[in-house]
Image (cartoon, rainbow, N blue to C red; front, side):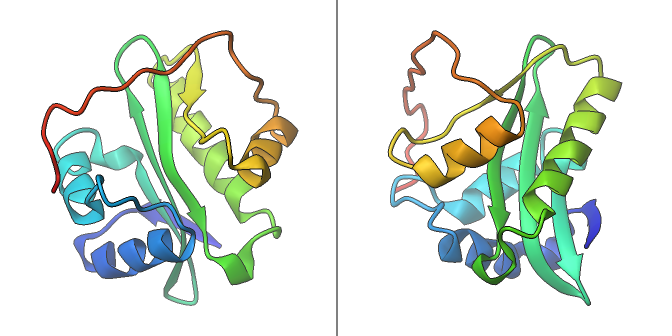
Length: 139
């Protein structure tokens, strides 16, 4: 799998990937999420491709205190082949190069499959509760 930065020509394929991986929600417009990401640290929005086909993605960020990862996705037909691990290793490498000391990842508590993946990658549950507040509605 070739890992590279997101390109505008990837937009529809990435949205389709996120939908296939059931990452989209009605209150989060994926097209707007991409547009927003491209204004802040676009170099932390990575694509995995095989023979020119977008098969994976990860969106990272660093605020000077903590790193974050969202939209880690691997096309269902390519899951369990190490592609998610490769993308996470690359985003971790980029964050470390920026001086990021810790990475936080938000996973829905009902998504045991994804929680298992991250646990195998060395992540553990922090003793915190993630709170959110919508500032700009997408719908």
